[in-house]
Length: 193
Image 1 (cartoon, one colour):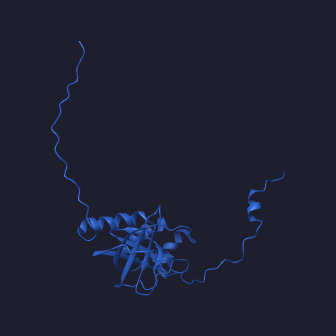
Image 2 (image 1 turned 90 degrees about the horizontal axis):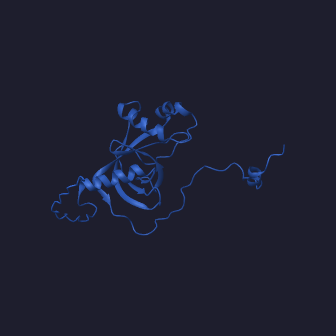
Image 3 (image 1 turned 180 degrees about the vertical axis):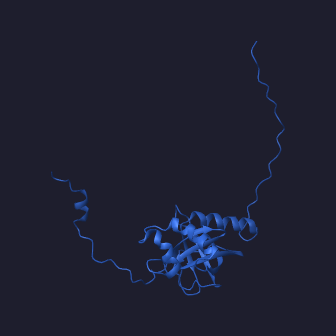
């Protein structure tokens, strides 16, 4: 005698259709969108009261984007001082297009405070090519600023129309000399032994 399998079919309940929401209608969804998009993007465009948008690297930590800069070898943070408002544009990490634009309140963290230490703990793991390795934390405490961009309630902005392309911001960064034309050949030249 073969053992049989008994299957009980339950009546199906109709699913509630999802209704799309527009930005600004549900604060929890807006907050989740800002957080998830900003977490996944390693680069945000920040426009403060001092001028044009700048591309800045950041980490998402305890509900805000945290940045380090304004010191030797670090990114400039012009106009991002304590208490000012800034506009943050988050781009897609894989496609590079704008995902979300949100308003932020800037807070400068006091060096060596518990908030600063927690933020720097996250930042140091993401800082690429630091010239001084583990000593960078002491350098950041002495010579740099760590700022926190906290999303404002109801601060989700509509995506702008058009490309918003702008000329590059003036910089003192230069290349020391042109790359020699023979470099590609040198890289692939076989060793003679």
